[in-house]
Image (cartoon, rainbow, N blue to C red; front, top):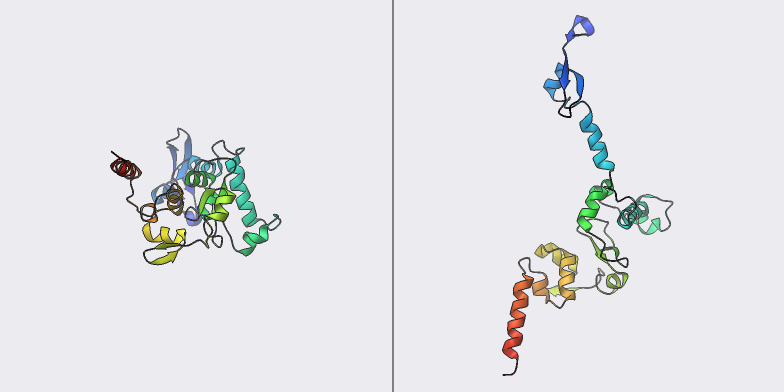
Length: 206
């Protein structure tokens, strides 16, 4: 029991934490739910938020750190073209490298960089993809439009309508798929391949 103001006393308990450590806690905090561990949950949370899973020296980590810098650091060369004009990294990526790595996936090659489909929007899963500078300039510019459902639309606009990620649509177009298949959320590449092979066989001279 601990003495309190106005002669009140407070119950104090010795507790065994799930991690195996012991701690002392007030009964009021245990009942109220504000005391949930010996402190290990807080330490684990801090580690989880700051860990890079051993990738702090990798190229992918440097890319992530570079994007954050160009968006957040006014002293960074080129900041005026990014953070200076409102370009930001989404909160989830900015606070968690692991989320960035999960959403972007492995870097396909040293020639690939994180590109944005719409250069007026920031860095987020829906606006970023791995691309080369040539692809970005020639194929993925926000000025390139495609005829889709009777409208001239960019790939990000088509993506929002059909529910297929714009990078997926682009990759399907790149291998020769028509836009109707590239933007089809139910598209099956294997079935389409079989149909193409059957068509070629039927057209072959006997």
